[in-house]
Length: 271
Length: 324
Ligand SMILES: Nc1ncnc2c1ncn2[C@@H]1O[C@H](COP(=O)(O)OP(=O)(O)O)[C@@H](O)[C@H]1O
Ligand SMILES: [Mg+2]
Image (cartoon, rainbow over all chains, first blue to last red; front, top):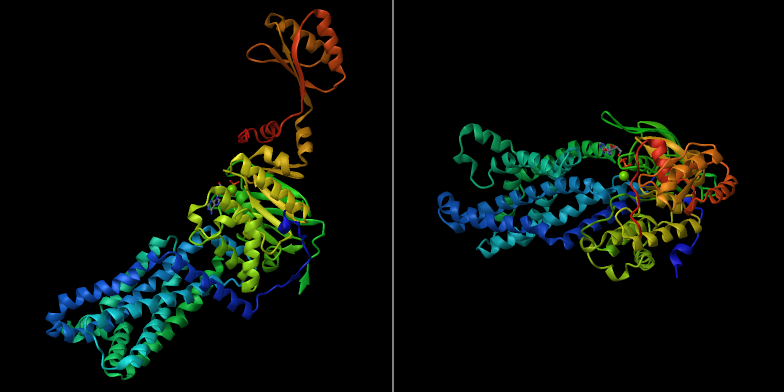
């Protein structure tokens, strides 16, 4: 009856270090786990789904008339803004979920397995790009339904979408860092919001910068989020690639260069 | 590449393990030696440091002091090798609550290097073995405590590790499920595994373990086979119940004279208890009782229970197993 337990323990080959290939395979498995979790608990996508819808409706109909004269001409301004705002704030989830995961029993199992130590972190960061993609698509679809038909065409929209996902991925390293060092998931949420709000609202995402006081304009203009928003507007509305895209990508690279090493260091000390 | 001789004598060889949490010395110099192919029980009350000890041995927690080897590999120097030799079933289920049983096992199998197909087959085999096939697709939220434990153990066995840590494997299980778990543990050892388990239940250690370490406030206070531990407390004791309560005084005097030791009378005044050094003296006692016309209702000799062992060693009682 007991086929499995009757097989005897055999001597085995032991490896001291995990190879790069193994690290990659383990990370993919962890990413697969992340996707399964999204599939099993679709309710965790609520904010990703609802935020672009509600924000688009709210901002367009409340501010649209005041800022751009009418709703139709506000859409090219607001949709890129909401896209960036939504996707970047979605990246907070990376940190929150990482903390939750690390506090759960299953993390002990991962730690006790002979897998690459970095895999759970790498897998989480990989799986979350799916979240960003969903948010990106939803925002564009919502805009389209409301009458947003950007001049740039589909290929520019796709490039803009990828740009936003890449930048959100870079920013998620910041939140992953908070996730690794914080004590509780709710404190990760708290610290992250403190960083996120000034970044997204003190930008040109919803309102053109030239309507703001000088001191605020100064911040809005150096805020990388503003450059990302401008880059997306350039792409979607006219199909052009400007200096803002370069600045956004450099900004993303700088964030990763700073936060990836310290996150990994802090993470490895914990596992 | 290195190989392991799973027949090497010590599966676990730990000395002077220490772990402090702030002021609290949760583990305070624990020494443990577990022979390969045996079941070793770590027995202690809640908060004694059992889980912390296991977590250090399983490379989940760094020891503040001391060292340990698993089949000869140092837990601090070769943690990745140690992880290839162990399976850990924690006190609280270490599986993914939001996924199904199959998904959990497939992910762990994939992490251990099995191909997609191998992982699927392995998951099926294990679910079958642990009687979880029917619940395989359901999310774990709806699993009972016993099912969760079984899945957790199944997940620890994917790679067939030669050493398995079980932290309180039967706490909270009903008697039937607990007996199944015991059978599984015995089977594991028969197939060549070594098992280190912790328990708060004296009966469980008695039932399963070849050797036992009694741990209290982070220290090993006694170690040996169950019989050795029982003997260390002292000899057996003799209990004599007297039919006629009026004769208890005379009976006590007689017992003390013949056995030459102080006797104790129970609260309700019918039962006499004395330490018994020499079993032969019992027949003398029986003859003397008859001669005096004292009728004994019952006479029994008891070896000390692990409960008494525990009480004697630590100065406090341990949790008693719920009767099955
Ligand atoms: N992570 C931790 N932080 C602080 N104290 C802890 C931690 N883990 C365990 N302890 C403390 O260490 C002691 C031993 O705990 P534990 O090893 O869980 O005991 P047992 O498993 O025997 O019940 C307890 O006093 C417990 O409160
Ligand atoms: Mg415990």
